[in-house]
Amino acid sequence: MSSNRRSRNITQGVERAPNRSMFYGMGYNERDFDNPMIGVANGHSTITPCNAGLQPLADAAASALKAAGANAQMFGTPTISDGMSMGTEGMKYSLVSREVIADCIETCVGGQWMDGVLVIGGCDKNMPGGMMGMLRANVPSIYVYGGTILPGKLHGEDLNIVSVFEAVGQYSAGNIEESELIAIERHAIPGTGSCGGMYTANTMSSAFEALGLSLPFSSTMANVESEKIVSTEESARVLVEAVKKNICPRDIVTRESIENAVAVIMATGGSTNAVLHFLAIAHAAEVDWSIDDFERVRRKVPVLCDLKPSGKYLAIDLHRVGGIPLVMKALLDADLLHRDCLTITGQTIAEVIESLDLPSMEEQDVVRPVANPLYAEGHLAVMRGNLAEDGAVAKITGLKNPAITGPARVFDDEQSALEAIMANQIQAGDVVVLRYLGPRGAPGMPEMLAPTSALVGQGLGESVGLITDGRFSGGTWGMVVGHVAPEAYAGGTIALIENGDSVTIDAHQQLLQLNVPDDEIARRRADWECPAPRYTRGVLAKFANNAASASRGAVLDLYED
Image (cartoon, rainbow, N blue to C red; front, side):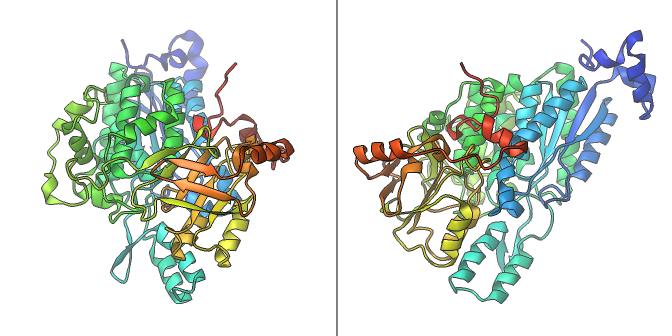
């Protein structure tokens, strides 16, 4: 069958003369109509350094597609800079942008009868949004990650964006001078690329490589290095072959390949956001995958990589010792991956990894062998209890104090909590509760990097607990639990906590508990009233009205009887 099996609907036949005339206006010739039309979903923008380096990749992809006998059709996808919007009302638009990106790709690919699509993204929501759009459209597709940022340098030490957030807390606690804060601010971001640790962008890019929809090594390359261009060109060539073979995303994204991706997330110590996003990706793929599946994988896959935020190294360090293929080889050798999952290359994941020339484990210390892991079990745990009947998500590894019971300090918005932290009003032993920040309540489920980093900067990261129905940045670490479901706006128990109540976070028992008698909780529930929506028009109102629970990925198209 021809490789223009979809686009021929708008390029072939007498009745499509008007369509062809519009193509002629863009420089097409008659021979082009026999070639596949392949979209280049370009996330370039000068909003954020994560995406400011994507245009050269998009141009390289378009040229490589043409050289391979395809027609490149470039269109844009939006982005929101999490790092810039963090701690402000703008952060409410971040998760919303995941859905907008997915809608853009589905709309353009579907509306224009594209034969395939190459998606290029940078900042956090570009990854899941792009993947969801690819799965909805279900035409041959490949994901090209824009690449990580190189570390900033100051006093001989590596810096990244989280360094700046934590420096704010250090300054507020009087631990550093203003001049040091300014120096960190000016040196942390040396150029383009996504945030450098195993934060959300690098977590998702790594998972996509494991999923089989990105090329080997591509997920940890630096944006500014020339190999990123070379990898993008190869991605375009691979995609043209996939179009010929009609290998589609839903052929690749199965329950087994998602389990492979989650195994790599656990092994690399990835972001809590991966839970939310892979629930949404599975939904887009119509694959049966629940929040409890993460816990199942966690218990059998150890943490192998010593990566930030809680570890020592950055994503580029992982790349230089063998990248995600080295991690996957270790997992394959231990029978912790499904070997026969298909990739966009047409090979199985095992065939791809076994074809690579990888360094030995002994030559580096970024990736540990399975026999000597950093932690014996994965780090992303599902917490339950009367505060999270539908589940919550926490990073539980590396904590000096994995359990805390203390008095609740309750805040109904992020800004008031941040003000209290900056004013040194939070003390060791407190449990900070940030609520009405879930998918519907905020709306948009913003990330709490500003408050958590301020606590870390003040030296309270191990001694203060924090729970929220919002999310965390991939750069967050400490005694923190997010994605609490049901959320406060839906009447979850988190809405019923009062200042001074005893609250328990116990990583060993995976317990999140309000230590108040059941009859008192019932009394408070009877008195509780749902607050008025914060927004009644526009995109935030639409998100609030349609968002599913965090335990279901906060998707907007979960239609159930």
